[in-house]
Length: 261
Ligand SMILES: Nc1ncnc2c1ncn2[C@@H]1O[C@H](COP(=O)(O)OP(=O)(O)OP(=O)(O)O)[C@@H](O)[C@H]1O
Ligand SMILES: [Mg+2]
Image (cartoon, rainbow, N blue to C red; front, side):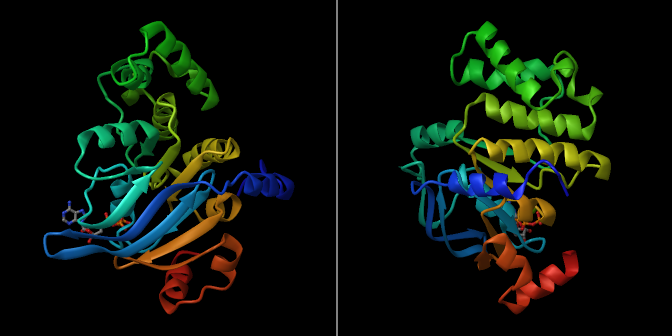
């Protein structure tokens, strides 16, 4: 899929995973009304780890990652992010949201704000950063996602791939410790997928902790330390990518992989 990462790079990436636990989900259960959407989810993520989550539509992938920054609330079990337990304490939630960046399928940029203003809004409002400093930071991240020349345009004037790179840059402006991605390339035309995945690969290279819901299996094979397969609200199977793809253990995983590969 990409030629930017060699096996040696990959070894180096692996060694970037630390022993520090940064996310812990303990027997997490969640319901939407009567519908049991997350069932006894146990998940430990270490700092610097890159995790890919895959599974059929409706299996609970988005719900799981949305629980990690409290866009969704769980009803049972514990979620601890960067040492903070997610509960109804709003102060905790605000803190978590500054630590955990999220990139959505449909970019979620503010259409009435310029690209630069989309990027500086969070740091100015939440981090009380002076505008000039926020703009300098924003330009740094726009350069990192390779579209500094788009700073003064509005989201509607950019391609999908460019908008998604803006969305990634916007998250990075908040200086998060963890980045969550929910199918970041699935709304994109095929020719734009690579430019977004390349930005994500570079981000992985910096040692960022990443949880990525995606069906881009080549990305999973290249970047992930671990692939998690969900079905019907459960984590059915998880393994390092090579074993996951070459030797899936469960019938449900085999069926899923046979459908998408
Ligand atoms: N706010 C909600 N209220 C009620 N049910 C919901 C809500 N959000 C999601 N669901 C249901 O919960 C289940 C899991 O949804 P979720 O979006 O987490 O799945 P997913 O694995 O991300 O699916 P997809 O691959 O289609 O994005 C689905 O059956 C969905 O219809
Ligand atoms: Mg989803």
